[in-house]
Image (cartoon, rainbow over all chains, first blue to last red; front, side, top):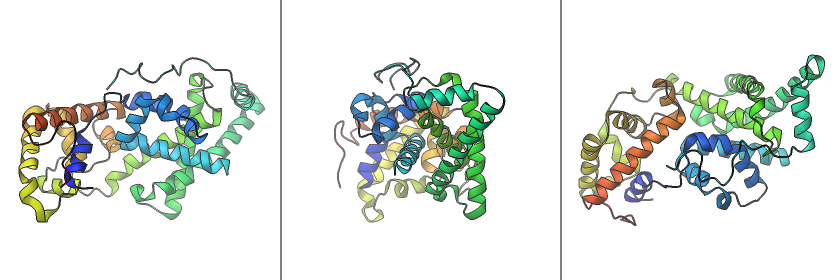
Length: 73
Length: 223
């Protein structure tokens, strides 16, 4: 990825982004739907937009998803 | 950003019909005496099983290994148990109870990652080294003539269009690479508030760069 693209990606904001508070509140619902192969991004586009842009919430989501997948195996 | 109560399709505060296992967890944890103690011990056992995996996954951020990492995992599990028991009334059955409970392990590990940053800080919080910016975004030093004006314009926009708070958050997170959760502790704020501050700063900076012709409104330059 070039510096131009990285900078543009960083500065670009998604108006659907719900913010950390809502994403953290809904994280278990979103992660469980994702783990089950459900249409999480389509059902919750504002949370998907947030998880793409927010490092800490994205990490929490990846961790929760990994825990659910480990548990299922 | 959209208001906190819109755009997600459903209200998590609405109570769903509980699955049998989740209902049993709630019943046991709301009971008293030995049944509650047994449920707490069983839940703690699950959290202790989840936490080490998450700590190992974030070991690079935590910058600790071995027994110290194990201790931190146990601490995260214990703190998550306290959070869960204090928030039982907030569980609405929109997921399995254990999925909801595991979420608090993630939050506790995140908080500990934030606290651990200052054990090995790479730069002081208030440092302001703009020379780090090209590297941060991966600009090629050999092509400096192509991006020098852009980053100069970005720096001017940071100085001219951001509020003092937005500028401080931008400098800490972008220039100094302070983790957002660390900044939450430093500024006695919340993850949501810091993210919103940075979100607004990003939006203002991009609008300024677009207005001045440094980046396109729709697509980014690919050089």
